[in-house]
Image 1 (cartoon, one colour):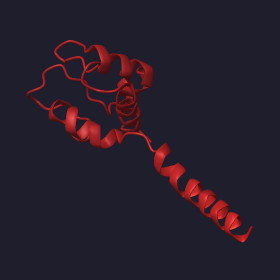
Image 2 (cartoon, helix red, strand yellow):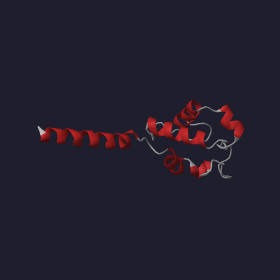
Image 3 (cartoon, one colour):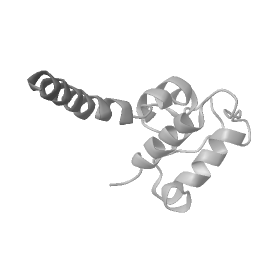
Length: 106
């Protein structure tokens, strides 16, 4: 009986500590840095070579653009920006969009 209790306690403890690790999704900033910063800059300011790329930290752009719209742009591309629907998982696209929204004014 004591062994069963000990096993149960161990299982519960493992579950409690393992769930937060499993719940963590993709790192939006890391993905942005790897996939987007080459044109949009690490701080969201478009690089000169990326003509017509959005300044992602611009207050007007942020106010007019929802996370949903950003996900659609990432997935389907826009202008010279390639589409990433086949290169990134949906949860990665969502994480990047959330990170892009975090670049806006605080």
